Image 1 (tube, rainbow, N blue to C red):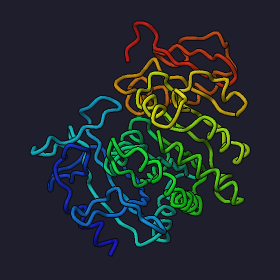
Image 2: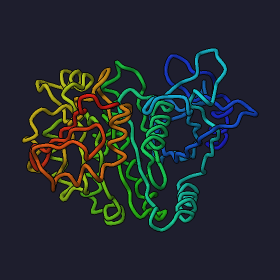
Image 3: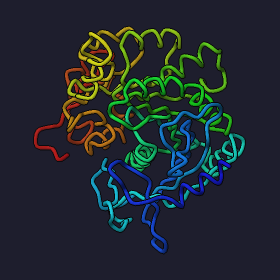
Image 4: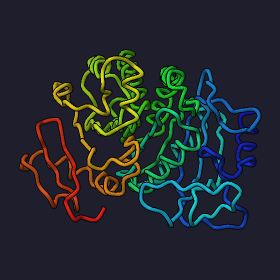
Length: 370
């Protein structure tokens, strides 16, 4: 039944509506660049549209592979959707070229294993991304395809799509759904490790950062020994997470995977609103102003407020300058051994200031091209 629904979903792909939706590559058209994204989701399929919606799937996640066409005619960090009623154009629009559903976790794991085995032993890395609040299935999928392409992720890319309703007024529902999705995320990580990944990097955006921490916490409490040794880094992008809760989670996890990077911006308007919705504090972890609040933890806070545009809630994914930085994140990490008063030239167009043992502040060099 799942296979039929997935195939129907691909057949029913239509032009983009008010929100991001999957759109199929027109027949007979050849894409220029295609990124493969493996997917696990705890969303249910909407019976009316045949597309994954915001309903919660109990039990094991559904698994699939999506091939996404990346258009060449766009800015770094940009996701371009087909115009409503227009003809999809692979030179300008993100499009879906193929969907392959898997009949359960074993088939998914076997395909991951085959794909990893085809890579050189030194490149058998897997980046696992999970989206944030108010995201449709298509928006999360295309975002990780865009980031995977623009940041040139090594190895394989995997997306965990939890059941966000995709509505701006459904904050509490989404927060509960992220908690609901913990077991599915843990199962996905176990499948990735069992498939033969040498290194796993977890990237959690917004509420997906809270989901990441909750999942790592429960794995630690359960005494996981299969996945943890393979986690080669965690990146929390604008995490929508209470600071005290983060401390509690970190204590339960114990030694945090390294590197552990938290990208923050005091100009993040979405998190400022979330803070007002959730209590008396003005801040969430992702718009932290005083780094001393996490200075006792083995984390690196990367302040990207200088690159904020719009709501400032996904600078790392949609800022061309920051995309260039992340492509050389090893250089940023190495800067801790350099002059802490600041330096230009380590990363082109960027002035880097290491304020203390846990914080890096990134600012554009005046006159540099973004």
